[in-house]
Image 1 (cartoon, rainbow over the protein chains, first blue to last red):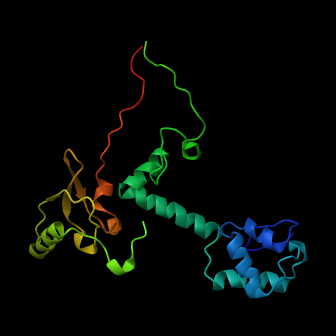
Image 2: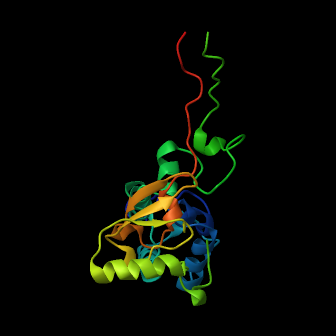
Length: 123
Length: 88
């Protein structure tokens, strides 16, 4: 299993798909990387040689894709900033509620987590 | 989101004028405003602004991080009282 960018070990799949296992690389970026390096997208990840791996890593840097740890850090940094300045979006992050104005009367389960039934608490 | 760049930031003329005056005279008295829709520009940094939330004025101290946000983002319009709880 080849390693790209340190920790990532994309599986026994076609390159076009295995590259997407890198955090920050999806379908579009995966395709651009392969097109620009001239590597066959149908090739399996295990058949990559050293040179091609380096070419891929070089391309990611060249195109300034923020991936993996850097990307995660950037995201938490943004969240911290919003929370520190006490703005509405920061508040929503703190409460674990949807940030972009979605309804919360129903749904919003991705942010709120599993349904907790409350029942009547007064007696 | 996504406002045309060519238009630039929107700041209500009324508050823009007050901010300019305050910065020029180094006046730190809070500025009262109803203009929640105004973008915070770098001119605002360091000022105290009282932003109306529909009921009262909420004091906001503008810091550098807040540039680019709107004044209204810092003055909540809703209060949430917890559900249930209470005594048995």
